[in-house]
Image 1 (tube, rainbow, N blue to C red):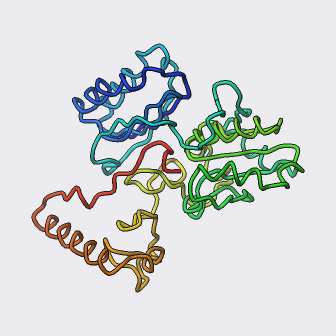
Image 2: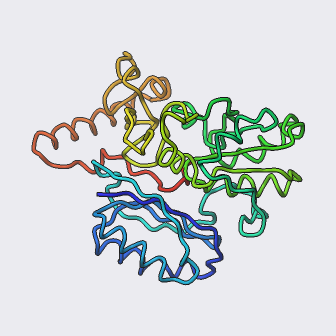
Image 3: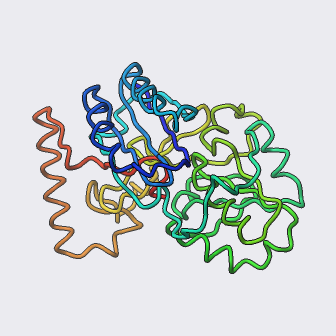
Length: 310
C-alpha cells in the first residue's frame, strides 16, 4: 500500500463538473483519501494498492491542465484513510485573501539539497507557516513559529511583524509545499522581494536529505492516520486523540487526564460531562467491535488531505 500527496495551482473553471467522474474512478479502484477541487486548482492525498493509486494519478494527468502534476509518494503499513471524498472548495488551501494568485507571483523555489545552506545564513529569517500543533511535533532549527491555529490567521500575523522588514531575505516552509506557494505569493504582494520556499515541503526534505545532514528536529505531522512521519518518511511515534484530533505522545498517554477515546491533556478541560458520556459510549462500541474482530469506522479519524487542515 502507498500514499500519494499532490497539489497544483491551475485554473479549473469547470472544477464542479470534474467531481463525479473523479470520485467514481477512485472508488472503482478501492482508493481512499480526500481530493479538494477549486477554481484555483487541486489538492489531495490518496492511498491504496500501488497500481490503483498510480492509475488515479494517470487519470488526473490525462487532463492537459494537470499533465505536469507532481506527487510525493510514501509507503503505508496501515490504512491512512477509511473512505474516499472529493470535495468542492473555494480554495484548495484556505488563506482567505482572494487577490493572492500563486500562478502569477510566487517566491523562489529552493531544492531540499540546498535548503540547509539557505537557512543557516544569518541574513535569512526562517518562518514555519504551519499551525502551532504541527510545529510542536517538529520544525527546523531556529525557525520562527507564528503560533497560528489556522492558515487563515497567517496574513494578519505577517502584517504585524515589523521585524520581517528588517531582514533582506525570508525563507518559508510547510508540510508539502502548498501553503508556501500562497505564503510567498502573499509576501510578494506585500512588497517583499527576496522570498524563498522549500520545494516539495518538509516531506520532500525528509525523503531526500540524509538524517546525518538534516537540520530537521522531531517529527512532521501529516493529515491522515499515520499522524506523523520522520526521516525517510517512516511512520513516527505519535498517535491521535480521538476527541480533539490532536497528536499525542507516549508521555501524554501516561497523564491522568488521558482516557482512551475520550480525552487527552490538551482537551480534558474543554469536554463537557454530556460530551464525555458520549465519547465513553463511542469508545465502548469501539472495544466491542474489536472483540468481534470488526472495524468500527466511526472511531477512525478521517482528516482532510493535503494541507487543508493546516
